[in-house]
Image 1: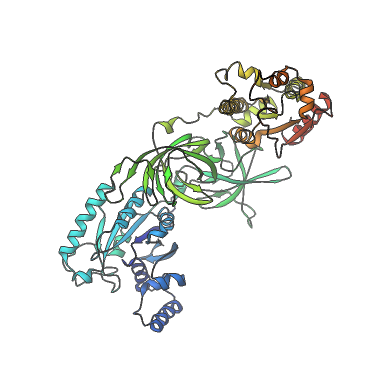
Image 2: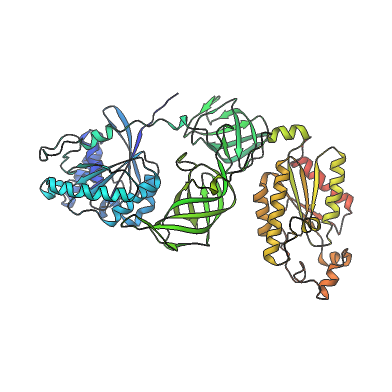
Amino acid sequence: MNKTRPLRIAVAGYVDHGKSTVIGRLLNDTAQVREDRFNKVKSLCENTGKRFEFAFLLDALEEEQQQGITIDVTEVPWVYNGREYTIIDTPGHREFLKNMVGGASRADAAVLVVDVHEGIKEHFHRQVAVMALLGVPKIIVALNKMDLVDWSEKAFLQREQELDVLFKSAGLKPPQVIPIAAWSGANLLSKAAEMPWYKGAQLAQALSDLPPVSGEDLAPLRFPIQDVYKFEEKRIYAGRVEAGVLEVGQRIRFLPSGSESVVQTIEVYGELERKSARPGDAVGITLADPLFLARGELGFEPQHPPKVSRTITADLFWLAPKPLVAGKSYSFRCGNAELLAQVDAIESVMNSETLAQGEGTSLETGGIGRVRLTLDKPLAHDFFKDGEKTGRFVLVEDFRVAGGGRILSDQRAYLSTELSEVTVAERSKRFGHAGLVVWSTGLSGSGKSTIMRELEKQLFAQGMNVFVLDGDNVRQGICSDLGFSETDRVENIRRVAEVAKLFADAGLIVLTAFLSPFSENRQRAREIIGAHRFVEVFIDCPLEVCEERDPKQLYSKARQGEVTQFTGLSSPYEKPDSADVILHTDKKPVAACVAELREYLAQHQLRR
């Protein structure tokens, strides 16, 4: 069903150029201002000795009324000629750029208000760049305060020509330019007698002429998982439909995990039964299969998949006081996915006056540039041109939004994860269990390999597909090029995690036996593999017992200086803070430790 929604119009402009007055007058002259609000503003102006300010009909904050500026983003419903709009009043002052970006990012069209007398300032250049960055499809420029230039056609044509040049330099089509005088209402709703030379549409008519926007329900389904709630054996996957239609009985796949199932129910608080959900609906769903999905997984119809990448190119608007520089890492948020992003390169920086792209090594506050980012784990996303909700992101520094951007199409982005036609559920049904990684960590001599080998033998005898990845074997093959420096040891664990992930994707139970001495690296392995199928087992054995065992004579060689950077002696071992299972091999025999581990797996992970 083709469903339209209110058209979202962002209105922006520099301080004192009349942006809020334009909105206030549109509301007032179409009788959409409450009488008590009008009287309150009128009384306020009389008590302060000011002329009546239409802007105050909109500015809700007392601080804004005192300073005469718009600080926060305000959304106001407006109806004209039977058509519904949402007017988004965005801040114009430079200090409030972050709010302006947030408001403009939700817009279908924009009205930029410019004081024809004062002219086009640098801040307006930045606003145009933001509109281009966010992909706002239609822009109207309202040249305000025409009364201050005696309604001059010459002044209007001069500004119109300047705007054409500016918009073309930003890669945008020349805007529709409308001369107005907001305070008197000239050319807002009806033709201004003072400007007989102007033959175009009035502002309200120009908004009325904008084409309708079809609802996002016509786009491919995008359902990011926000959280998973468990009630006994029931799992409810909660999120908000960002695009498309979600329906009971629909087959749905998730990335980056690749899991797939069928929507069994759609659950909404206070409703007994829901058959479908549309864009903007916050719902919970249950699935025919008990999938282990984490926050940030993106649900979609199998025939319309998103991209999955770890390297992205993006246009970025920078807001933080400290400049963005290559080599630095930031928190990255796209939808409900939270990752770590390293800035690999700043490919170009936009000149805030000419809007031309040029070289640059950093991005200053208010700057716009094209950057290349590498993420610490795969991200399911769309290109911004294909889906704005799943194609834009923010960077966070010190718990504050530092910048916002849109993901662009490039060759690297096409290196996407190829999805198997065999689903996770189908593999689980065939093998009798889901893919899983049991990650054991502990000092050399603690008993990791012994326990994992015994566990492998027992699970295999039970008919399960199981395989051990051992540190020594991996070092002789896939990691034979690595030494034992801290950097190489980090890379060793990363490679092991990637291999274990592929094995788990294939439906195998992977048992690992690695020192993996650093907490950060084990956490990264958990993220690569997926927390829902990662079991951390700490083989806890005192150093003196491990050294007494010394099965490979490594402690002896380390004491004699033949082996350097040896974990537990010359290199630290960081014990897990919250391992899923802790086995004390100095107190229990191998059989008891394996039995304890099997009991945990039977209760929490392995189902037959």
